[in-house]
Amino acid sequence: MQNKKSTMKGAASLVALAIVLIIAIGAIAFTFVNYMNALTEKAKTETQLEILDQQKSPLEGGTGTTEEAILVTQSGCPDTGQTSLTINNYNSMNETASENFDVTLYGISPSGSLSTTINDTTSPTASTVNCGETTVFKPIGVDGASGATSYIVSATSDEGSEVNVVDGNLVVKTLKANTGIRIQSAQHATLECRAYDNIQKALMYDSGDATNTDYETDGVVWESTTNNATVTDESLGIDMEFECRAVQSDTNYNDRGILLLVEAPSNVWDAPVIYFNGVKLSEATLSSDEKKAYSAYEYAFLIPRDYAIKDEPESVKIRVVMNTFSGVTATADPEFDFAVRTQFLATDGLSVKLGAVTDASSPAQIIAVYDSSIDVTA
Image (cartoon, rainbow, N blue to C red; front, side):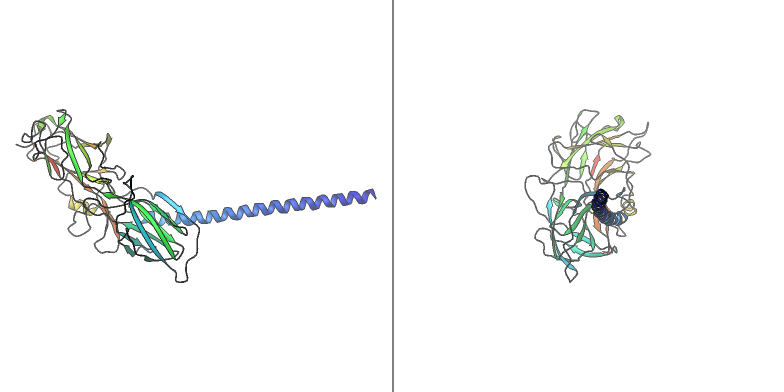
């Protein structure tokens, strides 16, 4: 009898152990399935970002970076296979109010072709895109006061879509019949500057202004610190600071970088050294079209995209240091011009490119150049 009880207890113990093992194996399997699903979704997202990175212009450099990524679950595409998409754009520079403005977006399909154009981002009518397909929307810049820039800083979507902002472009994968997206980008500014002579320790005069404290718009000829009719003494060298800011409220003069173009013959002047708020700037790598357009300049420096020039009381400071060679007298005034880079529709209408000028046979300026020179010749 005792042996029978022992046998029954042993069998019960084995059953209990088996139940525990079954539960444990089930939990492990459940965890493994969830882990594999997560890896699959991560791989899909990484593949999208890798594809976009391959499409980037070499002028932008680096690898694709995601400023903001919002991933939501699939809600289901309709039988038509199409989504009605609306995009509203708001001024990222306006911190006190919700300011809506238009930006043109060109949608690039997975094959690399231009598939969709959106012009109205204030009261948009729906555009049709393929549901479940990834489209890269690239904004283009517009010249002038409060024009659109070509860099999106953030994006949000209603439930049922995948939305990313990668290198300032909007990456969208719609997953339902109707999708609304809200993006933010900056409005473009025009520029105004004044100049400070670090050698004379005073502000310089504009040739057309008897007051040296004013900020001047495009087409400035900087004279000395004495008055607006006395030239700068080149024999002392040039060590000056442009104090620059945006003219319009809630704007940014920068877009996708600014080229600071310097016309100063290399047989008269040594190579200039330029700083932005104390940070030394590097020479820019120009596109073939920019090289053609700016062939008269000896140097081009790059003010990076993230160096904002806003409408603030404290202007940014761009310092220029250079000297004439010993015994050499300048016969022309050195020029310092600002050219903003942006995205633009290629001449063939099939793609979106990056640059300060178009890709036409005679490249045209996209955002107007801010021209300035220093009068060193009598």
